[in-house]
Length: 404
Image (tube, rainbow, N blue to C red; front, side, top):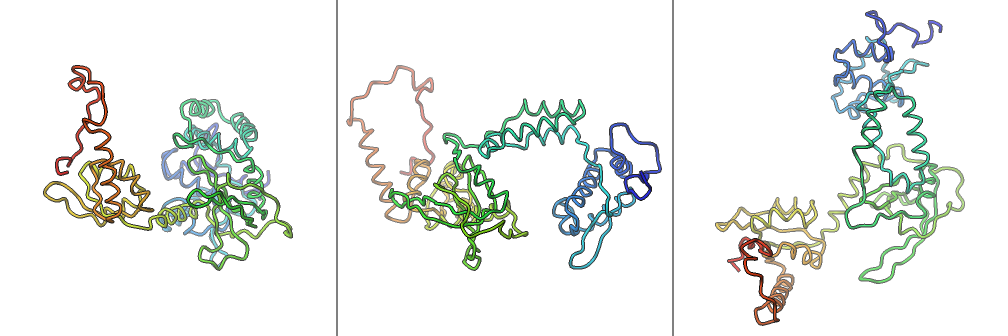
């Protein structure tokens, strides 16, 4: 190998290479001390980031590495001193680059990295996308390249951990059109889809046709969604962005009159977009407010029955506990019907004060239950002797029940 090849240059003037570890990695390790320390791992990751995305700025590297820009500058100097030819360029298209033709070999997996890599996939998601065979082949190829000790660590993690994405009591939806839609996402190919929009108040769905640019797929609690942009709608209040449940797409085809891929927005970040839209969606559903008085136990149980964003907003307006320990707060809810179902689960630990119509519904429910379970409403078999004392069927009285 000639002297012009950057990787042929000696990376370190100290002792010779360590068996089983790339020379570049050995140099970085010796430069910063502890071979598996935090800074050594960060330097290796920084070199790989610059190699895979030339021109990353100090700000971009700082975000990726979760450090300050000053730390990025110091780390770049450390890489240079270790023999990694990192250079920075100023200007509009500036950033950090590796010397032309240089390829770092900092790619040896450690046991912990192999474990997390083999745990990072969701088997059910790969199967839904039609990628399970390809993923298994890739896993076998990667496994074959690992050192025996690293291979054992990776295989051990698969035997010890399993990720089951769907929520309890929900059948995971595996839409028939998902693999075809995934291919369109990969190829940045505009599609025309037919979408069954849910009807209101039990009405049948309405099927609408849309031409969209599919940007990404999201698996949320066992349900697939596609994040897409409507061409020419960038000026609307949502910037043209739409989210569709894939299992409601009834037909899918390449968009007529389009050739080649669409011009994908390079600044689009699927994870950030989904997080922001999910939060906005959850808050947009909270269209009305209910005033509730809660016991201490009701306050503890509230997050289990109401959306987290609503609880956070309600606690911000909560009163101080009164002498009986009761707290009054204004709770954002989707509707009075939803609030009725949610707060009913808190039993006597929640008292609705307003609106009056919702309070009246709880009064009617309480009256109906009292009539149903009253002493003279039906013949019931007497409890077995000692059942109450043994705890069978005994219930903890609700806090604040005496105030009713």
